[in-house]
Length: 147
Image (cartoon, rainbow, N blue to C red; front, side, top):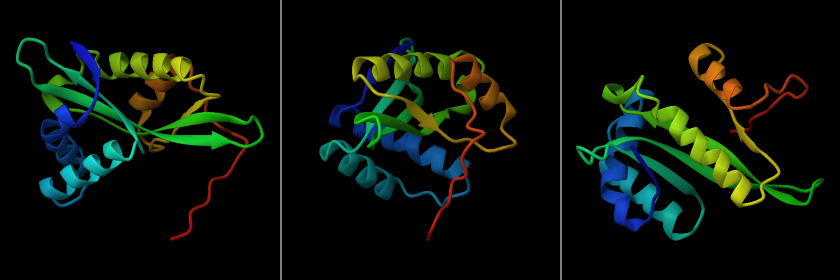
C-alpha cells in the first residue's frame, strides 16, 4: 500500500472515490461537482488530501482530507481531519491506520498544535481507532453550528 499526498495528477481518480464517499453518506452522485470541489481545494491550497493506493491494482483504496485551521491562543496552525473514507472492498486491510499514521506524521512535519476531527456518536469502530492513535475525546466543550 502506497500513501501519497494528492496533486492535480490524482484529481480524476480522487474525484471518483470522493464521489463514492458522498454517496455512502446519502448524497446524490455528482462526479463533476466532486471533481470541481477537489480541484478548487487543491489549486487554492485550501486542503491536503492523502490517498491510499493498492500497489498491485493501482486502485484508490481510501483517502483522508485535511483542512488548515489556526489557534489564536497558541498562535499556531492546526489541522481538521474533515473526511476519511475507505472503499468497501479494502476495509479491514489496515488502510485507515496507514492513512492516520500519515496524518499524524504530517501534523508533526507541519508543527501543528493539534489535529481535530469529529465522528458520529454511533461510530464506535472509528472512535476506537482514533483513540488508539492518541486522539482524545473532548468532554469539555460544546460545538455549535449556525446555518
